[in-house]
Length: 308
Ligand code: CP
Ligand code: NVA
Image 1 (spheres, rainbow, N blue to C red):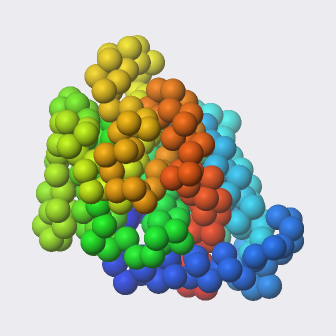
Image 2: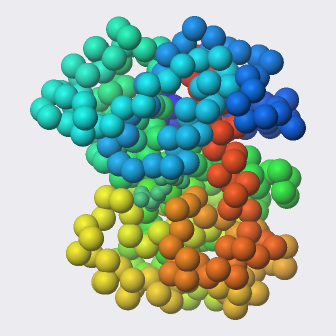
Image 3: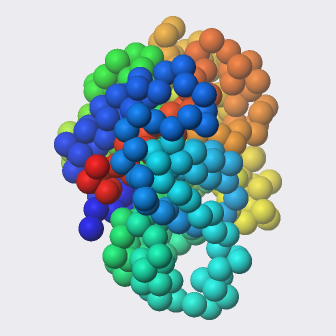
């Protein structure tokens, strides 16, 4: 069974194939109405379950539209409305869904839920975000970088803020796609050291730099994300904001990066918190390309999972 669980759990060659397929899939749709089907319909006759235990705009809509454009059908399921949210085991849910659908995408809290779903499902399972990672987002981000600047190999990416799930997938990608990653943020919110060590072991330069100005020197790409993730306790908001305020991406910080550095954010953003409006809407920002590219990258992921 070919699951897409994490970037570090996927072979480098497969990741690169998925990205090059995503470029091709995107180009093939240029200028078409959103509702028009693709010429190639590899999901014809396929049913895909999209399970959400957390809110979503991009993941939900891009998977739903992507499946339909490829000729398939979707079923969007909210975790709380499923028996899964009322005591049925993940394993039983996986076995039951496998009798009805051809593929499962799940956004959940604990990584263990995703892994158990993959272990017991007889169909491919795709990670649509857990507390620990968000691989589909970073596949879209690699696609976006390549469109604007060519290969990301050897480039310097700076993550500013919380060492969270999206940061983890960037660390996974650093080792696989061969780019350097500098984390700049407060020590209590450092990324998982296991992911830092894993990327370093693949030969890329991963640094932790507390001073954001020093961190962004020579950067090709600056990345921000929310300071309070969906799995963080609302009561932690104030402490997190106080810790993270020095790491806001604003024009002054951008000015210390390379003049042609790009700015990315997976969205949803909290404008004037982790990033200013001026940067979000400025000439270096590619945030809406990233959002669009979720669609194309995930189509390539789904085709890879199904061997199509
Ligand atoms: N970036 C992202 O995954 O957005 P949603 O939470 O809207 O799906
Ligand atoms: N880190 C954020 C990403 C949202 C797409 C969260 O987990 O809430």
